[in-house]
Image 1 (cartoon, rainbow, N blue to C red):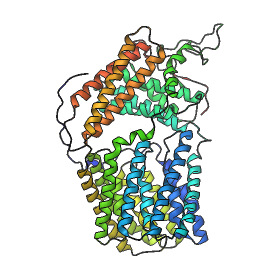
Image 2: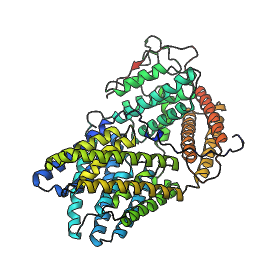
Image 3: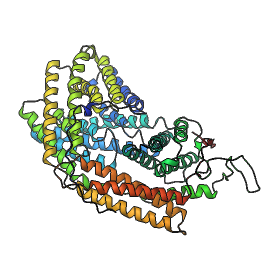
Image 4: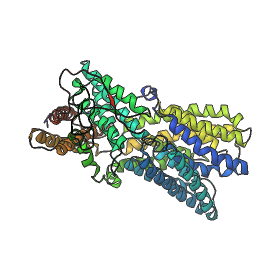
Amino acid sequence: MSSATPTPTRVRRLPVVGALRLGRPSDVWFKPALSVVAAVAPPSLLLVALGRLDLAAYTMAGSLCALYAHHRPYAARAKVLAWVVLGMLGGLAVALVAASVTRNAVVLVTVGALLAAVQKAVCDATRVGPPAHVILTFVSSATLFVPQTLGQVPGHLALAAAAGAWAWLVGMAPAPLRPHGPERRATAQALNAAAAYAGTARGGEESAGARSAAYAAVHAAWQTLLPARNRPSTTRRALERLVVRAEVALAAPADTDPARLRAWADAVRGSGRVPRTGDPRRDDAGPRRRDGGGRFEDDGTRRDDGSLRERDELVGVAAERVVAPRPWWSRLGPLAPLAVRTALGCALAGYVSLALGADRPYWALVTAASLYQANLTLTWSRAVQRVVGNLVGVLLFAAVTPVARLGPLALVLCILACNFGAEALISRNYWLGSVCVTPLALLVTELPGYQPTGELVTDRVVDTLVGALVGFAAALAVTDRRAGRRVEGALTAVDRARGRAARLTADPAATPAALESARRGLAAAVVDLRATADAAAGEWGQRALPQERVVLAEQTAHRTLAATVRRQGLLPDPGTTSTQTHTEDTSP
């Protein structure tokens, strides 16, 4: 590890225009968009038919759980969705009971702020992913200000639970059609990211950003594939071999053919057979042949599961699969500053909104809760996006209100359209999705009965500004002073992982399992270092970060990864240019 002198980090300029720049839509934007419509529509239309649309707020609480876990394999998705539904019910129960026993607005805002902090910490620790805590906070905060009696609470919770069960079924519905769909998408993203990085390296303009993105994509693919504790299916094993190829490309981009990686990625995205990679040491596959030992493929290697090549290739994966995952509560410690920010910011935003005479202080509370990201720079960007999206969204609400008030069915259809639009657009930029989220939240307030449009618009604008300003002020007041320590810890972890990989690479007696485990451990440590350094660089009010040490540690780790890959024999012979691919007989 280099002993380069740490250099102070320059405070980043707070972005405004850059925060609003549109990106590419998510590859699967239509999945959450269609899922939330399928989850919200049946309960809401049933209540329309029964003439009880006033109860739709409770069913919608459960239906919105369909937004979660679309990137997870179906076995993991089933568990995550179940926990999301239970978490939603828990927050809703606290909110309904609080609303039943007191009408003191200050007390209710305090309860809402504490709930938001708990929801933020748990969602970040469990890495539930988008939309994370925001939906849960919206549900619990809104119901805090709906008049309740204790006798009504069980019935309202039952409605939310029934809708949550339906949302679970909606989320699991694609499993019989594409049982490995999430794993295929994650593998394809890893291959494409590795191809992009290899392309820049082969062109002589190696990009650190492309390298970090590729390592993150490969790490995400392993996070998707590794949770399978039982014997993996043939398809999953084929996908694991493709991710190994992406890792090899990252370690030695100059020896990689980006076109081949992209071809594999395109084939994986479909529902056909998973591409077969062949022997990475002999990509110039020879003619098919047989001998007395069994079945052979085009590259002359034995296909059966006992082949030495496949065993060497995936032995590290098998070893990692039996290691117990780190418990989620062990990650709560570093999240303490974010939890404190959330509690303080939400509470102050609600109190200021009450002082200004607002009838719905939970709008300011939810706005503040939505701001808090990994660091202050990202929190500022989210504040800009939230304000712009909400201001445009209230204009959209004013435009659709005449249509929504044609009747209960029209109101439900407008809500469904806003749900679809929000999920279809939010992956391009948060502010664009907020343009649809804002009228959605306003339309939900009209489920019990219509209200003056001008009053709703004014209150929403004021509460948005209050929530954004007060919430960001709270973030400034509660800085994460431990960010620098976490960078030091990540540097130490990379140094240890690199040392282990280097020792094993130099040891002629090192086993394939040990080499594979060391390589993947070092790659994961590099990903964690980059994420930790980026998060710390956007934080204010802390000591100088060792940026030079971070860069040197990454460079040294990448050289060690390349040496480990060569030691494993996972690189093709120099001069190999064949792009022939094979397919393995696997089910989609």
